[in-house]
Length: 468
Image (tube, rainbow, N blue to C red; front, side):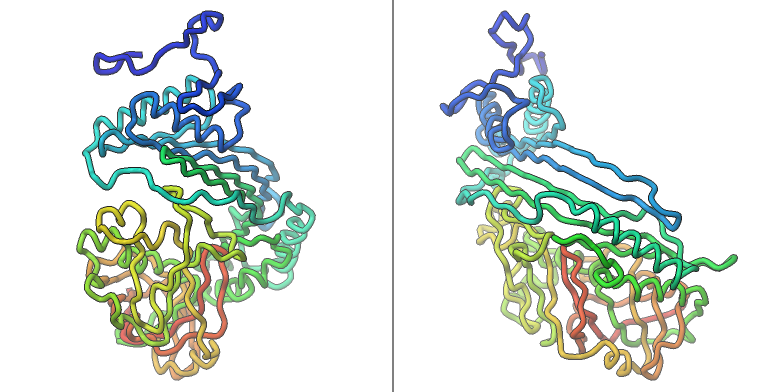
């Protein structure tokens, strides 16, 4: 194959293959050759991708290969839509050419597919812009790790689906669910780079998700959803996902009313709502925003940026959390980080690339956020609101660089004099995340663990609320 007037792929010298590149692995880096790409282990395959990239002239390279054994039960109110098992293999290769970076992915292992991926990665690198921060990481190689069960407990998975459907029929006949599933994913991942870093992790977890709404005649609530992951099957999804609360809110939302007037009031942010907002806070505290100078917290390290009641941590190493990770996209072992403690900013979320850009230590490579629980009950938090809303879901664009936000509160409820009065029609909310964090005045004891994150309820003041 010729590109830009030069040969970028060589054919095998083995004439018994009739001129076609075979699956015989060459020992490009002095390691023992392997008999075939198709039968290679994940760690050997990723190492071979790196070796072939270096043989092609890359100054550095890294590769990642994974194998996902997946089982799912899809269902709606009527019962099962689909039950199936799937196995997917995928890999990616990143090459570096004197500070230029190129990436490519592949789903097969034939010599042709590997060569095509390398062609794509080299072409992208050649067309790129050099950056001295582009390089592979030097890091310790960890022992291979294993998280979760070896095989899916299909019986308990089915019991969880059946128990949900039975309770829907008996307790929530107005609720309609669709595109819902109980699944088991067993993913084995290997990583290698040209500095000799080699990582391998196998992580198996159950996932449960439900998309739902309430309907009665011509009336319908907004669509809502629940989703979580666990190392154990969801035998009782009502308890694990807080589905009873969410389905009850869907039914109560069949009779929405607007807020009585525009006002500045309180919000009680649910764990589900905060899960949607946490990404914006994380981005404002990231190395990318720090390097770009777009974060309002650029000079705030060591200072109070939130209420003393608010503590935010990054916990990708939590052994009990299926949403964690042992290493990041550069093969660097992950570590936990106390980002904000009692309102004080301890550090930023700086990954490997931006640690090189900022010439600062790496602090994060994978995100799994948790907010520390408080000592207030949710009931007491609601009782303490003079006027405000139970803020269940935010629909809107991301905040600007000053963290100003505006959007629509969905699946939410109006609170007055300490009581939830009624469901809200689509209601506008606006404010500033910097001020919102400072104005937190209560944090609940109760919390929801999504597997990928864990949050309590948060009460804060100073949000402008009005009818849409």
